[in-house]
Image 1 (tube, rainbow, N blue to C red):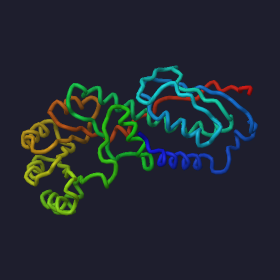
Image 2: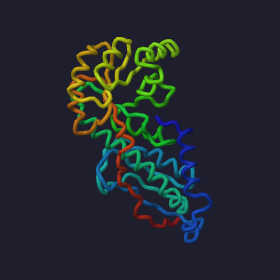
Image 3: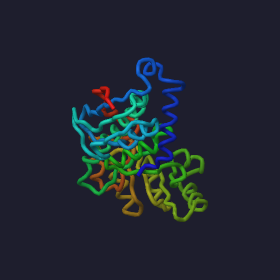
Length: 281
């Protein structure tokens, strides 16, 4: 579920950004009482995500109803009608770009995530996103990952203890970093350590890390790392994960694979509002 208290703030800020004063084009050619209908059409195959967010834009603007023909997670195809809008023409035109931008972005993420997931569905590994999200859009982008079949890693810095390279350097090494984290964070928190070589893997195991992230390691080193860890910690792989190599990675028996590309590099889905025409009330 999406927290619409947060989403409404995102939408309102986006509308203010796009309409700081007025929509001078629409207001100059469309009367205040004009009523129209328009179709939401998909122009490529993929997984749709963000339909309720799309509809929320027009709910906030007012006087526009959105009849959804699909639900989040459904597969859609070129030329398929996804929804129909009817209401105040000015508000339809004012909200069009903001609503489409959010829907296209979220559907693109869901579609890319789903393609990754299909490559590893024969394994028990889980596909994770990262914190490499668009500022202020994290809640929407991580929701889209879940709609595509993926799982969320930490949502924010308050979610879990994750000791990355700079944390380790700041603490003077893995062992000290783990000990300090164990001492100063809640006992209910797992401690994850990012490692870059086999020496760091050994130290993380000896320090008692709960989760060990193999970051940008070669396939041969990852295989040896799995032997060193030997089930003493959960294993996550990250760095240069692609649709082409993810199955080979998960076949090593790792628990998680995380990819920032799910959110920072997903192309948008091509969706548009078409066939607008006046409606006589």
